[in-house]
Length: 393
Image (cartoon, rainbow, N blue to C red):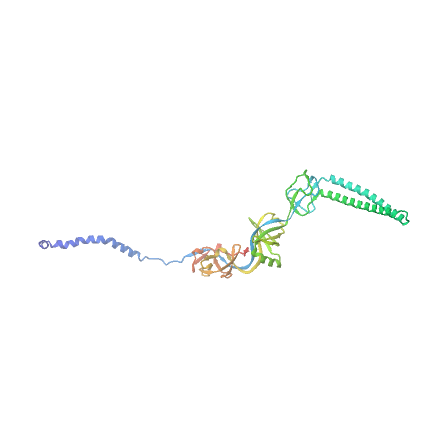
């Protein structure tokens, strides 16, 4: 108590000394609040709506062929294996390998000398038997005259008539032998039976060839030409119905040469279904020789035509939980979500059966960035329209 009364100023000073420490201790907190208070009310510019660049395509309305796409293989219209009809030495080959030959043009020549000799022999035998037949005829006439006067017995007359008939038969046989010998000589010159393209030589000049045994060359007729292909049996009824009206059109392209189109028509429907498919053949005139026997080709069989179909590029159609949809670009450059019902493919395009009208603009890419009402910018240099090519059921 005494000390308090003697130094009253010390008791007043003590709180003053503690005050600075309190301020220092709370200074960081105060500065933080000030900073937070300053950050809580920034000066910001107005928000700008995001614009998504997209490619766009216009839905078009056109007639689309209903086609079945498959692959096939070229088949020669006719194939002939040339074999000799006589035995002899192959003297000449009158064509080049791979050459186009015409029906009737000579291909091979077999040594004809033995057949020429056979003709001479047959001619000699015919001349002899003609003379014998003439004599037998005269004897039969004399016997007939004598029989009328009963100068000769009936038996002698009958013998004369039999000899005459035998002589005439011998003449007929000789004439047939001569005709056969001449035919054998003709066979020494082998000619092309059809217009075709020759393959490689199977026998070289100088070899002895055997009748009906040795193949000399294979001829393939490639103009016209068949393309054989198969389609699933589910299309058989449609093919039969439409083929009955008129021959169905068939197009083929050669892999790697898509621009080389050949047009043909269906000519053959097999008489049985095998392993779930039906075999078909189409005929192609093949004047440009684009197709070749054994060659694999892409085949499009046109069943019918769908009129006034709406087409858009296939990449414009997306699939979601509720089905397929597109984003339609409205005049104000915003997009609208539109459910659609897609049909079959038509090349790179897709037929839209429901949900879209001709002339409407749809987004072709960038769909992941789009929602209802998103504003878009169309890449004009890439804007396009759907292009119908081939359709597939």
